[in-house]
Image 1: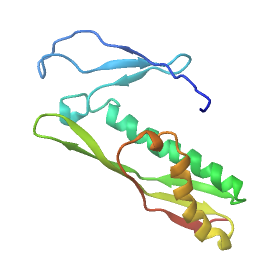
Image 2 (image 1 turned 30 degrees about the vertical axis):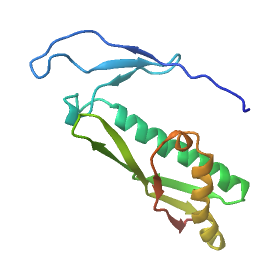
Image 3 (image 1 turned 180 degrees about the vertical axis):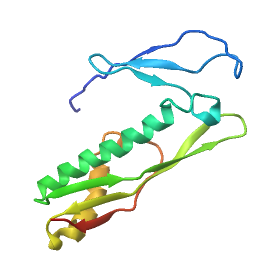
Amino acid sequence: MGVKHVFKAKLDWLFSKNKVVLYTKNHTITINGKAILNVSAAKAFKGDAALYNPEDLLLSSVVSCHMMSYLYVCSQKGIDVVSYTDEAEATLEVLADGSGRFIDIKLHPKVGITNKEKIAEALSLHKKANELCFIANSCNFPILHFPICEIEN
């Protein structure tokens, strides 16, 4: 059995009718010692498009955790990563009964490294990073990787 860590978040919502929907979906999430997150439903679900939504936050968690896991495995293999960007996307399927689920997340990491001889290994390490990623290990849908690796000085 592994080491356990507990994470806490507090959600606050107040009833407030508006003209678009019966009630607002806007709420706040507070995590002790951090900035308050203002959250709503996605625009497609009658939320405030200017605010983060749970779908944004799930995708952000996956892409962030993958990057941190990837940087970790690269450091173990002596690969110097000098840049990392990702334009990730998540596909949500809404079913006829109103329920829904993510069916996949596609990561498109573009990584800059300093050693040309390490490109193939750097590309292959995305698989290992996915195996280590806490968030990916908690998802019940595929997380697909379409990495690019380039030399940067």
